[in-house]
Image 1 (tube, rainbow, N blue to C red):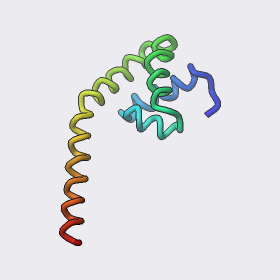
Image 2: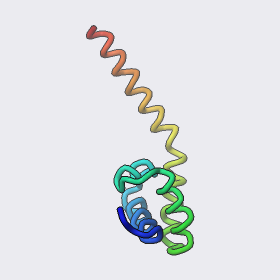
Image 3: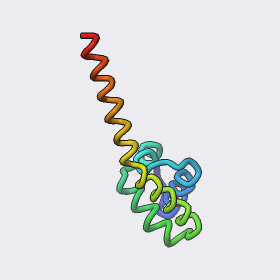
Image 4: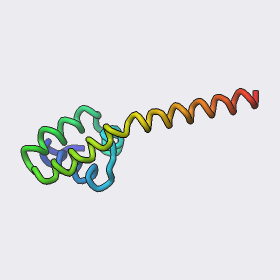
Length: 89
């Protein structure tokens, strides 16, 4: 993705605000690092588009509040798959 930081921050901000995506999901979608996504939407976006920054900040806070739930669900899924696999073998 060959764009400057402010353009990239705006594209990332619109994507995150529209989809509710996590930083990790946005990084995968745009093929950049998680730290680049985070710095773009927290630093560059704050300076260039304050309204979009506030929308993104709300999504990031929501995702942060829910991440322990997603982690628990992933652990449960792995545990259930392990149990099913041990029954088969």
